[in-house]
Image (cartoon, rainbow, N blue to C red; front, side):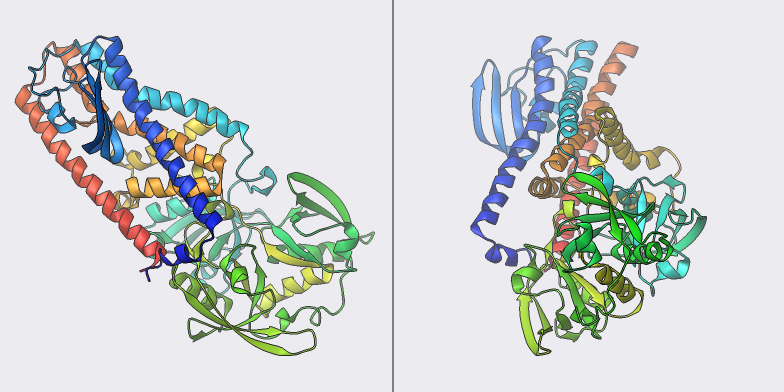
Length: 588
């Protein structure tokens, strides 16, 4: 069974209803962006007295059409755009590319150049006009991530001890400031710039550590991660910083006496910010050793409120007997509600014996096996320990899912379980947390680039900068192979629609930010000076206004036909790349 089909059979009626509702939302929001763009052209043309033969949402054969007021309105088969057939705006041949230009009527004389200019710019201007209220709406909605969870940059939470990243000198708490000559302001920037700016299998980083402030230049190897996207280059063995969630509080512990409860998020210990559950264990131990009054100050997030609370700086003596995760082997550290691991019956403390028929030798190997399975059924064999010392063998089959992006996933298959080894620094930190009275739970969050800013103007500036990041290397400095990486990283209509659907399921605020970004993108891309785009109309109109004559019809026709073929080919290429991405992401 294909990996993208298997989850459908495991879905509840409520989940299917959410998926269908989100699909209707995609159709409405994407259609709204197209109607606003083409409506701008149409309204400007009508106000200036130009003839509009066709107003179409979509391309290809008309599924529905009706003529009214001299214009034929259509809903066409391929909903990846739209057009308004304006014979007085098109140079020779452009109307034929866009659609029916009047049913055999003699074409009217071209409009005066300034009217053509106004009509051409009106579409992108309306997209920008729609982006403004969307930015205001995003500002009014609760943020995708609580501000207290933000680290203010691309901060490393974990660096695998045996990874090339660790060998190169990266450490937990490192904030990446630049990749080569490109500034980095968030984790998404780091992912993007490592892919685009790496050369000859290495990425050059400038980092500053949050703990000691040391600034270093590091050259780290990169690996090609074909299971995520087509040819993505990344740094293996690193993960973003995150807070330490309280999954459970040990009865009678210092954590319980301090008032910590399930669902709280530990942000800081004293004046030190932790970057991972392991780091919080180290901070707790250090604070306890240096506390003159036997108290530790904790910064926590409870719901939407941030609080500072004091806690006793004492630890339990023997928590090896409290939790079986300290037995040798690879264990489930925690499970997340509603995710495949919990649904299949796995629990914190279960020892993982094998994954997909291969013996579990390390946490990293288990995680790699889960990712390699894609969204296909995966068998996990485990052992559960009873309070009386008994052992029970388990065999479960589950289907990894692409976790909601708002929870930090959206790229790799996950089962919703924290996996850990009962050895080394990880186990030492877990002992400290348990000794204090906290059974940790993973807390991950991901803020997409279009949701990074809160101020409306900053949102629009960020959108424009993201679009320019794609086209800037065409006109200025670029790294070796950067243009090719940009070309293979672009998302076509399938990725755009599937991304919008995913974000509608994950976060309404993030989905509105995505639509705002899409409208800014449509405005800028359509103004590129390319025939068959609005920017091509602008060039033709300015030529007429400056030189007092039209571009020769044969030249205009050749340009329109050539660029029309190129755009169709690009459309087909992007659609093919989208299909390949989805195939690699969901499994075969």
